Image 1 (spheres, rainbow, N blue to C red):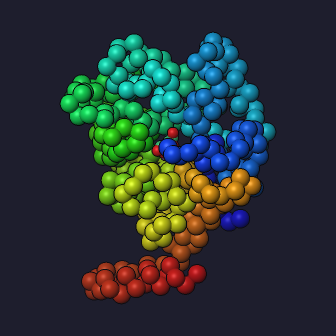
Image 2 (image 1 turned 90 degrees about the vertical axis):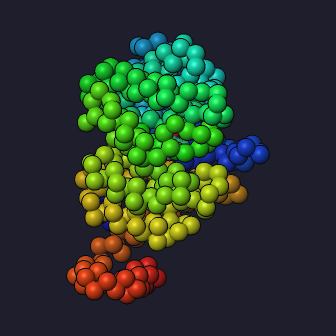
Image 3 (image 1 turned 30 degrees about the vertical axis):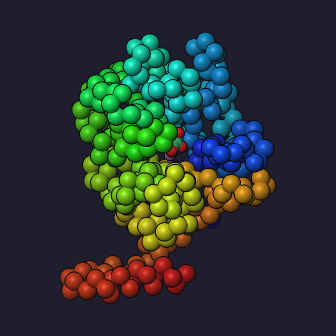
Length: 344
Ligand code: XUL
Ligand code: MN
């Protein structure tokens, strides 16, 4: 498969049991090591990991046991010919973080959140990556009057600074999301993430991860979000997927709802040489009705859609596009894009 210099990744959560808030899983869970065997055949090169995907039950392990667990994971990845793209602290499933972790009202919880994140950094180091993705799942509120957002923003900054200080090689990519699981998130947009990075003690080591569905939930265009971060060399990873309107976070296959929106994400990534910068992560979930034995096609489809769109992007007649722009013939440009997308 021609991959045009791109590397691709997904996380083990992208092969899921299909549970939703109204019903339990509908597919048996696949053990992690069996998931690993699927990556290469599907065309993927690296794995995105939560800290406890890499080292299960890490809360109950000593630092030496965590290192040992991460060491075996490193070996399992290498045996499967894969690398770790990043490690993300999973703070949102622990009961302590029920109402926020870095921004919890209770100081003990805030301390726990930073300590747990340090364990994630240790795991990342063992796995050979210096990238941590920070999805601030429960850093927000259900009730605006219940919390002090100024204080919470400073607490987030304090946590980031503590982690930057803990490991001088660490790079943090903030993954913003406006809602879910909280109603009102403190860091809803890429702009918020970037601002937080600028205010941190080492701005060069804080960037962002852009997820298409999260941008769409804000009514923003993912391609513009990508461009904004790339203008400052701050786009360190992506979670490409799709989303049918302003609903729950759907994580649909890339390009499956709005092909032109997907085309534009690929266009800005490719024009700005993302293949030299980062890995294309696909944060997609199979439709719930998909039978277990067929529940990797969302990954196959997303990767193929990305690559077919790269081909279309690279085949665009750039001179003609420049002429059309100079003549302000945007209708013809519109037609050129539409016909390129339909002629495959
Ligand atoms: C949540 C989300 C997560 C993170 C990784 O919406 O996108 O998958 O990307 O924890
Ligand atoms: Mn994501």
